[in-house]
Image 1 (cartoon, one colour):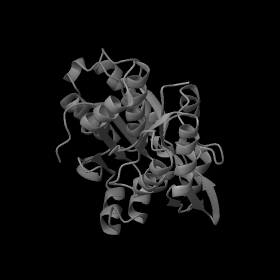
Image 2 (cartoon, rainbow, N blue to C red; image 1 turned 135 degrees about the horizontal axis):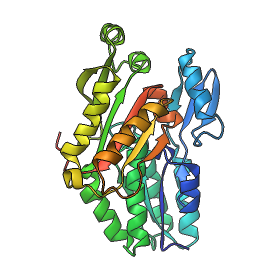
Image 3 (cartoon, rainbow, N blue to C red; image 1 turned 180 degrees about the horizontal axis):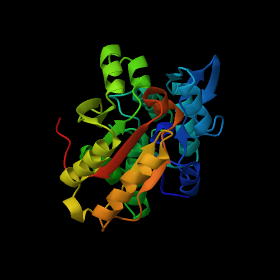
Length: 295
């Protein structure tokens, strides 16, 4: 048994095999599509290709957060087994789910006063959130105690960069993130916005590029600009994508060529059904460790 349990939310967008291998439980969001409720269970209840095809065909999924009861059950399973808990939550700049996790934390602290429960606001999402979970996992497995690990995550979470672009603005328009007029013009002119997550964990549009070729070059340039060590970056790099694996592969190939000291190959994951409910198909997101996000 691990010295303490690390847990997260399904919105970390990592493969089911990753969570199983490292014994990392995850709290499941839900989404409602065409009148039916589904768990965000990493593509088990609804395969990702079907999910994005249904959005393309006009479905408009609505997401719901993890309940206090679900967090309580997940935390208590570890506490009752004698483990402390280090939980990483989806960015508070995107979702209020951390509030439910903190209510569960407070309730269980009274029931298990001898145990430690940390709830960390990751200020991260999708496989960027997953990259933070992986850092926490590595820290633990390398012998870092729960107090030190929680402090390390708090100190370094703004060093985790999220850059992403979309070649399909339909879901951004539906969700009100892009106005109908701007969206129509953008679609007509083949505009691909480049966005990132700021220091408050919120999605911020940064620049617009005309065509995939330009925006793919730009997102790799941002990594060169911000990655720890620049072109000598030796950390891990994750990508997540929504029904556009070929575009993600092009980004990964450029990164592996430009950054020869990466810690392994670029991992490409699917954007899950909850984050994907808001991005729709056509989004590529890039995650790496770098300088401090300041705005």
